[in-house]
Every structure is written in C-alpha cells, then in structure tokens.
Image 1 (tube, rainbow, N blue to C red):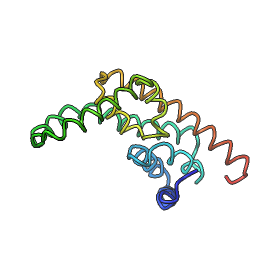
Image 2 (tube, helix red, strand yellow):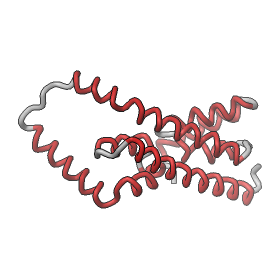
Image 3 (cartoon, rainbow, N blue to C red):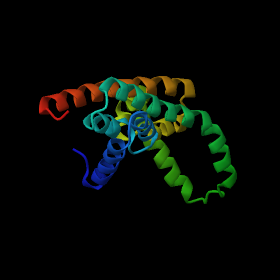
Length: 173
C-alpha cells in the first residue's frame, strides 16, 4: 500500500513517462530509478503500466538504481572528509546520545547484517540510505556494492514479474 503523501509522486512519474516519447521514456525510467525515494519500487510498475516493454524497463531501471548506488559508494569518502572539516566540535552532552545511537545501530547491524539490509533496502529504506548505513557500519565498499546489486536485482525481477502479471491479469495494456 502506497502512503497517501506519495500518490502525487506516482502520478507525476507516470505522467512524465507517459508524455515522453520513444527512447526518452526509458531515459526517464533510468533517471527516476536513480533518484532516492522514487527508485525501482515506483518506476518499474509505473513504466510497465504506461505500456513500456517489461524486460527493457527492468534492465534500464536496474541500471539507474544500481548506478546511483555505485556513484554514492565512490564519492562517499570525499563527502565524509568534507563534512568532517565543516562539523563543529561535539558538546559533552552529545556523547551519550551519540553512543546510544551507535549501540542501537550496532545491534541492528549484528542481527541482520549487510545481506539483510541489502535485500530489504528497496522496500524499507531505499538503497541509497541503506548504502550509507552500511558504510557507516564499517562495511567495505566492494562488499556493499555486491550485496546492493544482488538486492536490487532480486527486487527488479520480482517487480517486473509482478507488474507484468498484474497488468496482463487486469487487461490494462
């Protein structure tokens, strides 16, 4: 069930893809799949729903989503160094709150790990936030990239199959 506050987003994505023509539609699928909060969970069913080829939509959406995760992984160190230079010194009171958050994050990480996070990310947090969480937990970029790719691929296949089956069942396209 899509939350009510995201319905205009679905309409805008669908309208943008439907109003475009030819290859531009697939370019929009790529772009929307790369954007946090839209990602494959929205763009694959919408793209297939407006009549795009399911396999091509899945491949293009996968490339956009996975590509943006790899761009994030590659640029993370530079962004982290920039943030460190700009961050003020923490106050003494912040140490307790920071330690509690770190303990909570470590418990979650110890329980589910990178594979669980990567496989659930497209639905629960979005792959971009999940990649940042994995980086913050100290996982290696290569390992994160591999698990995120597996999670995105699994969800892409499931979404393409589900959307194509649902649309054919309803006789929409």
